[in-house]
Amino acid sequence: MASLPEAVQKPVTLGERVRAARHELGLSQAQLAGDELTKGFISQVEAGLVRPSLRSLQIIASRLGRSLDYFIGDESLAGAKRRLFHRLAAQAALERRDWGAVRHETTSALAQQPPAAERATLLRFLATADTAEGKREQAFERLGEAMALVDANSDPTELAQLLHARGVLYVEHGQLAAGAESLEAARDLMEQREITDPRLRARTLVHLGTVYRRLHRTAKALATYELALAVASRSSELRLAAQSHMGVAVALYDAGELDGAIANYQRALGLFERVSDTAVELSVMQSLATVQFEHGDMSAARETVDRCSERAALAGDVRVGAIVDVLRARITLEEGDADGALRLAAAAEERLAELGDHRQQADALRVAAAADHQRGDYGSSDHAYRQAIELLASIEDHPDLSTLAAEYAQKLRARGDLESAFAYLELARDPAASRPAS
Image (cartoon, rainbow, N blue to C red; front, side, top):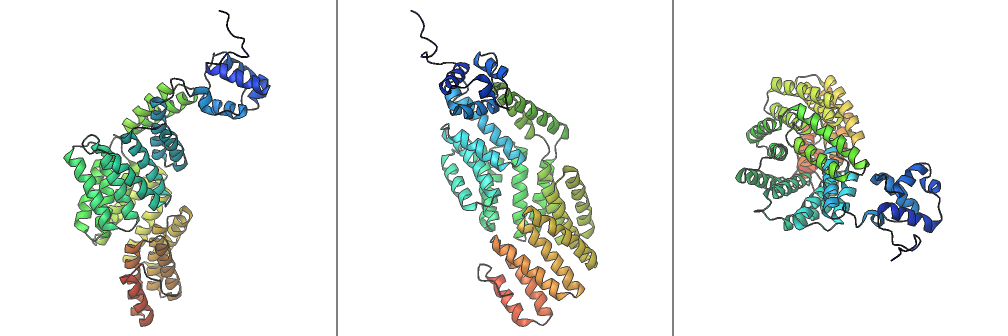
């Protein structure tokens, strides 16, 4: 039987579909190519001689007024393979803290109707992005839905991840007891099921140590931080290999070789689990220095601060560098140099304000306020204390707000301003209440 004419024969391959859609619109190959592509490239695509990258195909699809699925929807790249790629790409975006990419890749994977366990992982990715962007209620909802999907017997690692994420979110919400309970559950589950994920273990221990410190359980915090630092230390050569695999994965993805891209993403992520996590190490050192300071060991605190500052500079981490300078300012003030402490705190506060980290910015203002008070500049001290209190109230950080209000009340009482001191003591007792008038 003779084949149908090209005009009515159903297009099957990607190239045939591009050509058919182009003919329907009456476009030449040059018109379809536009400025981004070339006529020769379009000709090769239609002839099946080259496979366009997804980026190029998106340009072609947009110009032809068709969805991407029209061209590749029923090809071998569909289904589980495509879903796996989007999930791995979302995980890689989490490494980069690229929240827009996390949302895009995760939403794409969820659209493929994944099974329950995989859906739970994707919801956790979205909850992480929500937490980072301050969308706490939405993050709680996603984590609740995810935990209902997970079977502790078949997937204990995912459950530990979810318990960790929920614990971090509780702490962000100022619910320290609930945060400690969830993080301890994650830690205990990893020990019971012998889960050997150093990054998850280290991060859980870091956050748990921070909760202990904020609950004034100093000895327990110190031991937890030291354990986290030991877990976090790994070989830097493996990180370079992991980054190389990531580069290969991106190149293969752009070339349309999805199998190779997935394989390299998996290799990269496997290596990332074994390498040192600089962010965790910095967080541990920063927290360790804080505990040493609160313990009164100024020499050890300053040594840890110096180490952390050097690591932050090498890693290009401006945020941690600023946080460490706040602690350095606190040590400097304790040693009696109020002017030096004020300079350090003011510079750090400016950087933290630019980064939008209100909790740490409030801490910098607190040190600056204490330095101004020690210098006898009470007007500047009052302004800084009240600005810090406003910031903590705006993010509903009630535990830190209570501590700060009590400290400020003590300063006001020492100056004889008993009425204002009483008002801030009331705020310390009930930080959710209305703030005193400035």
